[in-house]
Length: 499
Image (cartoon, helix red, strand yellow):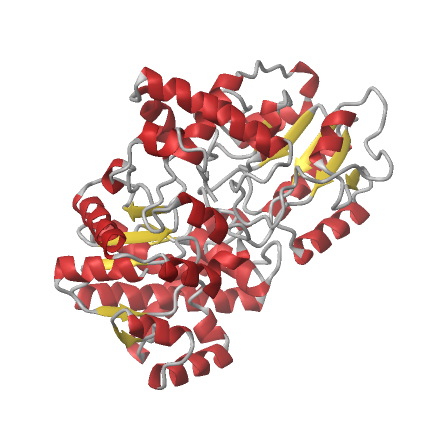
């Protein structure tokens, strides 16, 4: 963030101001957090000192006056009257700007619950606070000469600011980044994960040599991952779910019934990250599958998300208590055992299981047309809820020919081509720093970077960012960092795919 904000500040001759991002409502609903922020603003400590160190001039948090509160209240009452079902929350627009998904995901995250009760007073209060946040940022952007916005999360209420900017102030540069990419957002592409629609077109533009070598590299990396060999291409999972051994006994039944594995997502972690899907949240997806189970004679198994969250696992345990047809597999029941005991279909909303299980020849059905694999044919991608329901009720008729070449192409483009080491500029150093996902956010990573600092690297980083910010690209490119795709990326044995 230090490099990104300072390059932008230099570009626009601007000052750097900071506000609490992420779930902004925390600072209005949780008074302890608000007090802590105010005190730290007067006497910078801990993370505030980090921001001061790279030039932050001012800290503030959203706050509105009585007149603006009255405006927010009018909007709130109008919107509340339109909410008859959960899907209506996802559709909330203010000033023709979609914000319903931000409100929905922030509420689940803040209260650590899997779904919403529209009549719950907590939700009503949260909705009102979210609208107050919108009113604040709408006024702030209209009254201040904002040149650029740098944000960490674009999926919670902290992203109200970027939504307004993207829709109403297209000249404002909206940037986010991590150690392996930098993104520039707009009205069409509002978060870092929406580039999957262009992957096939981009692959076609590569040279024949790049395509051939890229697919060969993908095959090697995919097979390492599915064999449980540490590959550094797992995001927040502390350990590869494919590295697990075999459970003490077989749970998947030996019979002629169609067997379905449900790859559960984390119920609390931004379900609308790719946009709306066929259900308002993951809990409602499970409730629908429970209804399907009553109309079919399938065997149903649930595999917990690899980024094990105790709350999500508790939700799943409660679900199987109430729905006896479903079996929750133990946490140490590995994918290798599932493959060996054989499963007929896998269900996900948009998870990586889509390409992983497809590579093993297992048909995967996505519960969203907005999923990373939707532009390929190796998954079953219903276009609507009604089509999804029809497919699930008659799986005997479903046949799909899985093309592994497409999976390798997808993997190469998503996990290799669009991974740009703009910051570390040393793949071995990056590998060591990110060996443990949690560690990548701690001081060990910073110390490794400082110990390997050089003026040459420093100037290359600044030049790469400056080139990217002058462009109209959605993501920073390898060539903008002076990398050659073949010699610097594909041919390097120490290559580290996406984390």
